[in-house]
Length: 568
Image 1 (cartoon, rainbow, N blue to C red):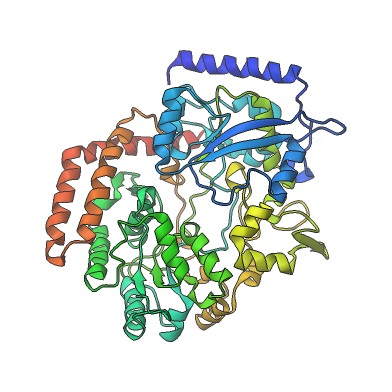
Image 2: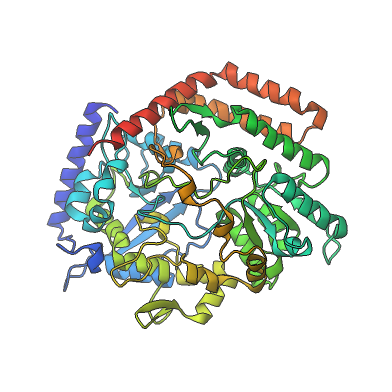
């Protein structure tokens, strides 16, 4: 980033902060998150003038209700802020590129890994001073981890409040791996499911006996969602089944920190060969690379899809539809499937707090102070409890000092969550806020999130409890390798790094994506005898496009991040 652009942004902060201060916008002074501070809202006896902030997010939000939900109304009451929000439809990268190019900046922007485009355009503010002066909750929660929110070794500005990576998290919930319907594993007698061959056999045995559903529609062994950016979920399974942690499009050597475009690993070729095999024997949905996300979800919601290799956040709406229809045995359990037993599923390999994807305040924001105060309220203890648990007396009660979800509310969460969330707003705001993760307790001794052992048990359906019992597990996590089996990643999760739009890794990465998204479907859907020829052509295409140069550039960024994070 050019020095003169930094000076312009710094001046903007000073000027806008002064305007906001003169307008009488002030936060609560001195309180901390642990003391229930509401610094995003009004000070005692002071009403903040209502303000509407525009917001764009690269993430979708199918249950967004314009803050007319119950939680949203409380947030507006506490902060005076209402969001005029837009969520990505189609390719979010194109939208961010358009925002950067046109200068039509929303007040708040969640650009994930594309934040570099906004930095280059001078579209977003350095939040360092705003956090220091107006965000005590954010400042307290980040603590010495704030170094991990800095943009780069060369440009140590804070351009985003991290929202994706939870602070001090200990995950209890498995929401990845491979998935199988409870009825499928039950009929198979709850066999060991550790490898792709185990997964395949259970599906094949079931579909041989039950080729169609009760309405005569053909059952589907495995369906993939290859629609647009969802292709990442298809291709991620290449490293997930061969022992690699989630570092985006790269495999990072844990000793040398050398980055390799993960598809170039010979181990991963065998995963895609297995998908080709699944297609050849009729167990892979032939529409996997043709269908749109809505079509994929409709198939899952029909109950005909026996197996998935997809994160729960991607198919969750469809599973909720199954629950609402009472088809509980057609919902899914999570299994640590790998290519062979020599590999470990890495779903619980911790990345630590990486300060990556987050929410930024634009350089044209109408009121940066109010914007940071809004985000700070969400980060407060009150804001986090509100988002995770809802409203006391309406969504939960406190019994013997312990928060408990009201049974009728829990039933709706379990069986009709989409409609419930749109109405209540519980859990709807998590990716707008820096937050504590699972396993962390608040000042009352209760967990911040609802993903803790007792609450998870309460949310399980009878078919789910039956499956877990059969596997000798209390929770799905028990089937997976534990966090303690993996070493720390000095760079966090590599995919959260934000790079300049003119960086060689970014420019070449776009070329590799185009090649990969063409060649992977071609290889998977080909005749088995053609697979090796197509794969060799794929590898040659990558070499010709400069994949080694891209890997060298990315390796440098990994090493720079490690150096940056080692500073205090």
